[in-house]
Amino acid sequence: MPDIAKTERRIVGFLCNWCSYGGADTAGVARANQPTDLRIIRVPCSGRVNPLFVVRALLHGADGVLVSGCHPRDCHYSTGNFYARRRLELLKHFLPILGIDPARFAYTWVSASEGQRWQHVVTRFTEEIHALEPAPHFEELEPLYLSQRQSTEPKRPFMPQPPDLLAKLKEEIRTHLPELDCVLGWQKGRDALHAVPFFLRQEEDLERLSLDATCHNSLVRYLPEYKGKKVGIIVRGCESRALVELLQEGLIAREDLHIFAIPCHGLLDVARLEEELGRYQHLENLVIEQDSLRITVDGKERSFSPQAFLRSTCLGCASDEPVLADTCLGSFTAGESTPVTAPELALLDGLNLTERLRFWRGVMDRCIRCYSCRNSCPMCVCHDHCIAESRQPHWQSAEHSVTEKFFFQIIHALHLAGRCTGCGECQTNCPVGIPIFALRAHLNRVIAELFSGYQAGRDAQAVPPLLSYMVDEANIQEREWQ
Image (cartoon, rainbow, N blue to C red; front, side, top):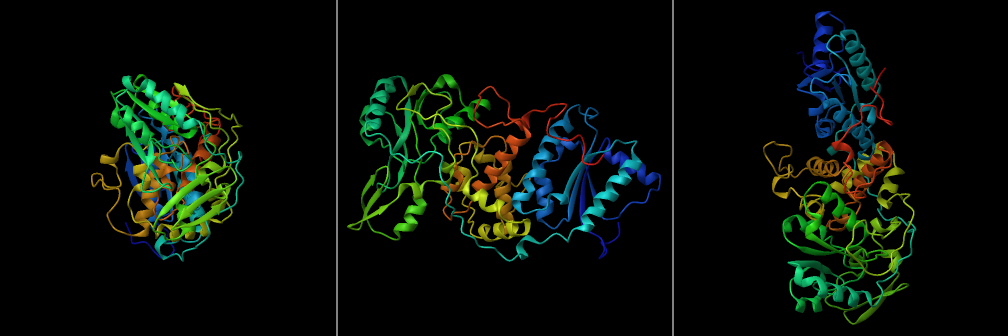
């Protein structure tokens, strides 16, 4: 293979061994004229092409990536390309939020006998890549720093927990505690502004139970560790959807759970409050009311509007109704299901592709690879086998580069595609405030558009869209080029 000339572009092709590779070979045997830009990687099946292959190639200098496999209904492994079609179409819609031009990626279907079609496909794709500017090098981009805060009106106004809700919850837990191994709840941490998970095992522990708008840590992430034991858990609307996802995947058993559902009218963004308070020695008091948030630090009382310090993931919440519950306490507010764009995603929607890539270049430079986003996610249950830390296969290096840090966030987002319930714990627990929830929110939006409004965590019997397929997809075309 000759060296890449100045006029050539770096184009990577993932070709199915049984059809498209044979089609490329047929075109070669027929001496059909083809561009020399394409570097072919042969794979057993298009279903073997992980979207991360494509993203990694584009982040590391490829000007374009082409995936080609057997025609639908003609896969050597029966259904491999049906699954690939869903994943690759999702990827096509995901690339723009990263700041990568979706025109740099295409997927198509070519059979072993279609040498002429292969010539047409590779020629046209190469022409489209040449029509674009050479792919920018991520680490060489000038960072774009923008304020990630945006005033977005929530659908429902903030309301503090009813004063008698905690007492009612304690009474219900006291009633069911003898038949449970433990109950997952919250207690106050180092001060009144910080709540931490709490595992109640005896009646005396009820005195330490806490419940207010600072209790944001998702308790669902601990449930897989208690599989086979009888466990009680306190959940709000978004957390009950995470429960449904774990039930879908068989990671917990419904008969082992007693679910205490409580209403929620918004949680406070503790990190933003700490930033506003500045450095302090002691936090003496915290009073949360509907129209005021009074915090006494170092002997001085400061007042804030709780509405202005709602978590961004709570801004578009339409309903606090739980999907699953054994004991419901308080009154729940039913709401419409129309999604509201998260502030972080709205910010990115207003940028062009280059600006988005520069934005990620700036914010990812802050990442310290602490994995708090992964560790706090209720759907990330493979901590000991995470590909971000595995060296077999070697998806990522330990290099502290901005590209590797960005790629980790892309891995996390794509692993949650069709599974993320929008709780926002990943972003809430990020110690450097990276708006990574925007990636998950965009994927949820694309999933709903492609798969008939599917929302994760609504039905324990449903099959996640990327684990299923339809022979005739309503919103996915048969192939990239006719």
